[in-house]
Length: 241
Image (cartoon, rainbow, N blue to C red; front, side):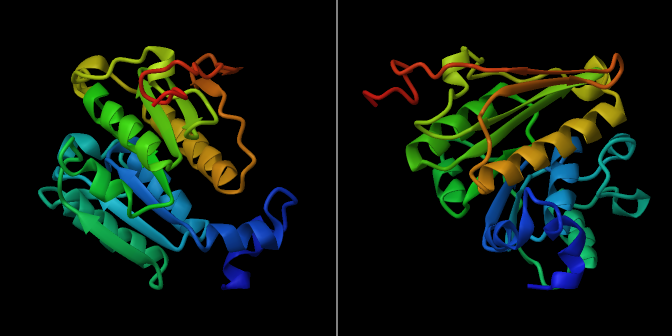
C-alpha cells in the first residue's frame, strides 16, 4: 500500500491504517457510468480501492459533459467504459479495472454482481435498481442506492438481512426514468450525491454505516437522515426468503 498517496485520509480517525487496508482489499462494482457513476468511480479510485468493475453499454454524448466528470470533448462517441478506464488509469496506473460494456439485466446481473464485494448504483431507471436489489440480496452483497433529480437526491446503503432494502420501501421495481435532459438536473446535485454515496460506500466497507436513507438538496440547502425499519416479511429480503 502506498502510504504517501493515501496519507491524508489514513490520518483521520474514521479510517486510520486498518480501515485503509480494508479499502485496499475491496472490489467495487459501479453499475452505470453517468453523472453519479462518474463521481463515485473517480473518488473510490482516489481513495485506494483494489479493483473497480465498470458496467455500462452507453457511449459518451455532448449532453453528458456538464455533469459526467470522467469525460471530455475528446471522448464523445466512445464507449463510456473505455473512456472511464483511460481516465481512471491516469489517476492510478496500478489500479485493476474490468470493463463490461453491457447493460445489467435479469440475465447477467447475478454473474456480474458476484464478482464484487460491494455494488454502487449509478443507474437511472427503476428496472436496473430492482435487479440490483434482488440479486444483491440473494448474493448477500451490500450495495449503495443513489438517485438524483433536479437539485436533490437520495442515498442509502442496503446491507442484506440487516437494513431495509428497496422492496421494504415499496420502491418501484420496473420502469424507465425521465431523461435528465427532460426532467432537469443540476450538475452540483449530481456531484454532491455521488460524493455522499462514495462516503457511505466507504462506511459500509468499514462496517460503520447504519443504513439510513439520506436526502440532500443542494439548492436549499438541506440534508435529512431517515431511519427505515427493515420489513421482515419483505418479498425480497424477508426472513422467509
